[in-house]
Length: 426
Ligand SMILES: Nc1ncnc2c1ncn2[C@@H]1O[C@H](COP(=O)(O)OP(=O)(O)OP(=O)(O)O)[C@@H](O)[C@H]1O
Ligand SMILES: O=C(O)[C@@H](O)C(=O)CO
Image (tube, rainbow, N blue to C red; front, side, top):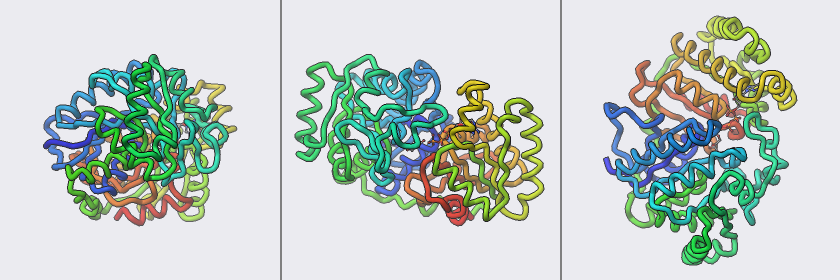
């Protein structure tokens, strides 16, 4: 297998979002969970997205995991490696976007790296280095209340500079509108002044097509699904790939029971849970009790779900509104509470799979990572799209047999997302 494009995703929902975009743009794509064991038979594909869980870990850990994945992707033939970050630039002043991007670039011999989280299909645009989420600057959007990385600055040049060793520049919309040659001139000019990473503006898909063409000439880029779209279209335009992917094969029915697990506290997920409550049984976990009386609260949730699940899908959610989340965090600490809740939701997910769940929806990037790790699923084939950024996934090499999953990024999906997902997972 020689692949054309490699990607390292900093969380699992982000990986499936990117894999969805690559598939929609014609690239046969597989999503692996970490670096796959050599014994895992992967299908013949154009692109591999390695899912890591490195968005909220210490920077040195993220750098080590990402550089190891980069080495493996190069061994598979990847000429270009995209570091997939969140379209809302989820990170803190300690990292990890800057440190990982710099490490990947150094491993590939250096040179200026294009960085853009723009993903216009989901309302993420970048103008003069400022990230907008829908109509709001990042720091006024719901991301200001994110449980793990509250975003209080919309200026990506500033944010990236705070977490990086090298200088950060800007490639503005004027350069991008002038086409690939102008972007290349600007990137080269910035590199000669010592800039190692350049935030690139992008508002429309055509901007990302321009960026994709130039990124493909470099060994490494950093961005969200929008840049993936640009790279995929550039590969197809160049004739290196024949755009044959459809995703239909991945959606063959698996049967079994179905369940939804949510640890996402994003505004979109909270609304989706309210809507689901009218249609199916929803258990709201008590996070306070989860932290104080962990195993008992987990056992009670498993028993509640076990009593209902043969009659239809059930939802188990730790999700709460920003005020409740910050009260819990001030009592137990941000990382400790997040980690304890992820552990609880992943145990509940695994127990439900033990009891026959084969169709599983998980909401939240960290929550999905913890659940998929506990289930020890090695890889996914990418099926059709449920909502922008969220495909149906079919397990590859899963010891429990074939399962269908949907890993939903917190802010993605319409208010009926959960029923829409289950309707596509038979
Ligand atoms: N009630 C709660 N109080 C405090 N933290 C919570 C609560 N419920 C869930 N969490 C934690 O909040 C974090 C939510 O992060 P997660 O990445 O899963 O969702 P998200 O941020 O909405 O999704 P994404 O990263 O895909 O946008 C997790 O660490 C989870 O354990
Ligand atoms: O890019 C996005 O917004 C998502 O794929 C994601 O990474 C959220 O966790």
